[in-house]
Length: 368
Image (cartoon, rainbow, N blue to C red):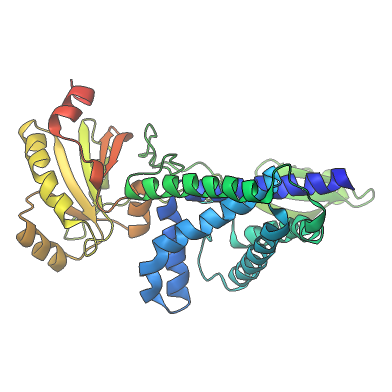
């Protein structure tokens, strides 16, 4: 039983540490999920607390994982473990049935699961969590109670620092499609495959074929086999949506941006009303240097033309504005605004507004 208790404890700890880390390293991703839930529950005003809740929940989840993994203060932390698992199991059950939000983000952007898969994952995890809770008094830490608490507080401080840093700058580890080095202008779709399964009428044996390859023209074979089922294999399913860029008149200009063989600077402001306005003032000298050196510089946002015109007049921004879906913009860069350097569809670098580079830095590093 001691070995079983240890195995259950370590498995639960690993899942919680992994889940919290991939979210804590990208807290803005969790912020967007929390905001989606607030909208779904009819309380969008609560979105102002989303960042605080994102860091708090991920830190608590991380502490539970560390507690289980290192056998620290489990007698008390097991209560938090059970409470969190019960809450999230109920929430993901509601999501699986009514699909309130398309992605709960339980593993951030590192591992994508459907709502039903997330709920089933939680059910399986509860199979390990409940026994750990029942055995909570049997676990004995090698440290004193005071040292247990000190170690957990140190982990909490380090994790919180990581999350705050990632929120103020960019994720320390980028799991998104627009991470540095990725090619993002792949617009071609892989072919969808259709499979059919036939069952032998006498033996019950089943055979699967590509829909175009089964022996439909063999009359003897067809008399011995009966159609059983079919399935579709779509290699494009679950991939990040493709960026669609439109000008102020609704014209598609995606190709001129994504297929540009030269260096292309993209300023992303997924919410122009809440963007850091000082950053737009600070980026103007950089923009002028970009244009003076014959490079392209544009801003992509979700704002309507009237809002953009008012914004440009108020801030003296002369670069061109374009529109795109806010979900895609939030995956491009976790900063509002954020700057991306693209070349021939490859992400060369990107910066949060607090880290905007100067022209000399960029030109010496990339444009020699």
